Image 1 (cartoon, rainbow, N blue to C red):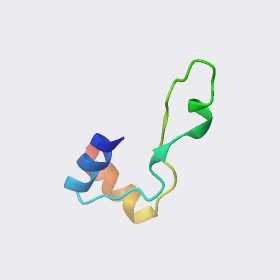
Image 2 (cartoon, rainbow, N blue to C red):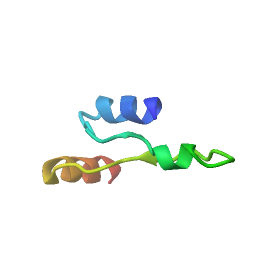
Image 3 (cartoon, rainbow, N blue to C red):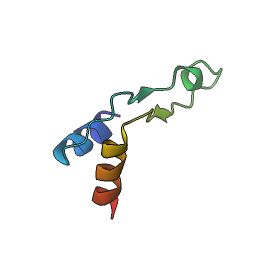
Image 4 (cartoon, helix red, strand yellow):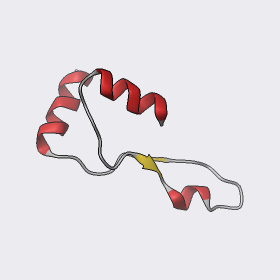
Length: 52
């Protein structure tokens, strides 16, 4: 998650809801998932442009 947050920051993108999914950590055998969460339309467009 830290690497993703840093890479996004380098591209000028912030995902405010970025974090670990607590449900994925509560399993008997944890399988951590990263929750990307919601973002504004502007942030989604910037993310799409970076991925292109």
